[in-house]
Figure 1 (cartoon, rainbow, N blue to C red):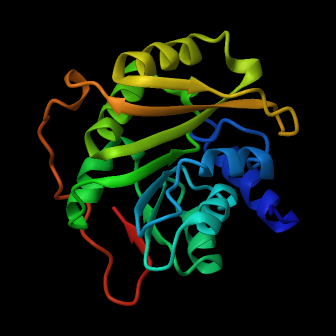
Figure 2 (cartoon, rainbow, N blue to C red):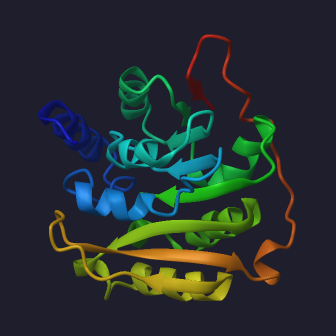
Length: 223
């Protein structure tokens, strides 16, 4: 649940990084729960969250993850990352760009993950950035794993949102758009994606040197 201090922290981050945070408020409970449905409940899993922000979706993921699971939360804003790590010390919070996903996981000895959940503002990203992130997601998903993300209804006609839809359908064999979540600010829908195509998982060079694992006793890693 988003608290008033969480909202203030979110608005502060949005004012400092308007090209990285494309919302006016953290995701609401219904949207968070729908995104988290991609997370397995029946076995210990490794889950990656892109654009964790204040942790609204992190909490919904945590409600589903079985004990012993691993939850890596990637957030580019260092102040939001610090706040999230203090509130949720069980998370592995990484201050990094989601486009460097493969290098981040490589530095932690993670070859594949059981789910990726994204809160990134896709419509703000150029096509090349969208391509890099989605390709990395497809490459790290374990067999049977899935990817969940969302889009705001008002942004669907924008070029960035149209490009994302084309990219998802070109990368995954199955892409399911949900019904609209009207009780969210702003209203949104989710995309659930499974079975990356063979072409999308072709290996590309991974340069991991920028992302060392966190030091002992630290849950926040800075690139």
